[in-house]
Length: 159
Image 1: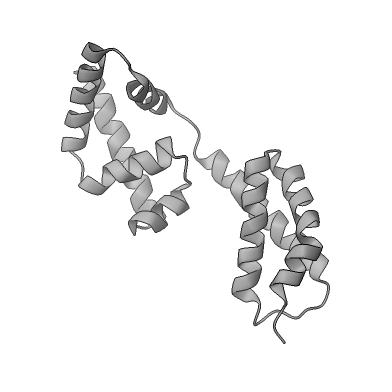
Image 2: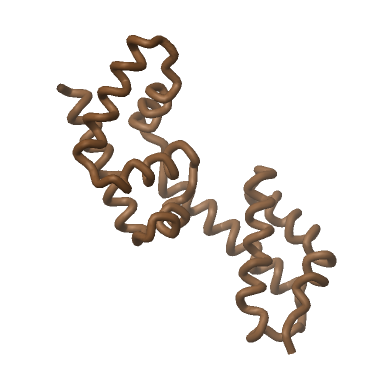
């Protein structure tokens, strides 16, 4: 017997959201984690038994939140991210031209999809897993491209 996801969402959604809020301490992230919990439940609904749904959802939400916390710790912010944000925020025409020149030189050395990876991860704040899904690479492939991009940026800054 398949689980009634809609009924579970109405009945247990607030409990799952409270759990996510308490672990993540961020409303937007908590909402995302709550929705991810129900997406995971939806994916597994055919093989799950409808016994103890609150315990199951509580455990699923906890695991999703802990995975998000671990992922955030694995990708600390670095100085190059600040540089990229500063480049994007430049207003004066002369400085903007200089920044555009630096970015053109940086991305000329990279594969075309690396620009997409950089925007998704550094500006849109997607996780490595989310970026990998978007661009069709493995997480290690995305990580390698970002590492290469940072190294090239450091080389250009030194020039």
